[in-house]
Image 1 (spheres, helix red, strand yellow):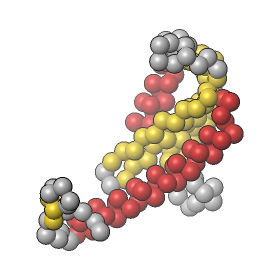
Image 2 (tube, rainbow, N blue to C red):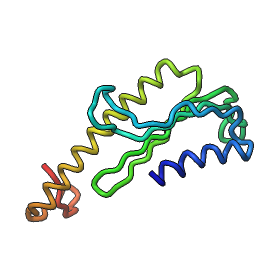
Image 3 (tube, rainbow, N blue to C red):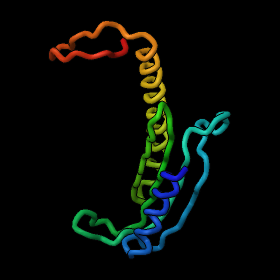
Image 4 (cartoon, one colour):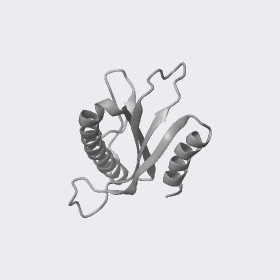
Length: 136
């Protein structure tokens, strides 16, 4: 929870320093995907703001920004997903697809790690000659 709060605090700090303008906090809650899932998939915060144009960011319009955080297998996965207001109809759907795919990839990696931790097969070399213990 501390990492999530710090990440959200960083967004508010950017507004305090005048880098983000007209900042609105749109959400701060558990995110369930799908909506009726018994357990939340992520902690989620949503923001809406304008950013002061600079050398790296020429676009002046409003943008949506999402911070998503999950933990598992001893790791913290933090995602920051930002898109311009004019892309809201497509990118808001894309972020949900990305999160679902990311969650599935993490579940597969956790299962692989658990299988490798319980039963170490003999190391094998891949096509580059690198020795590894990996899931099939």
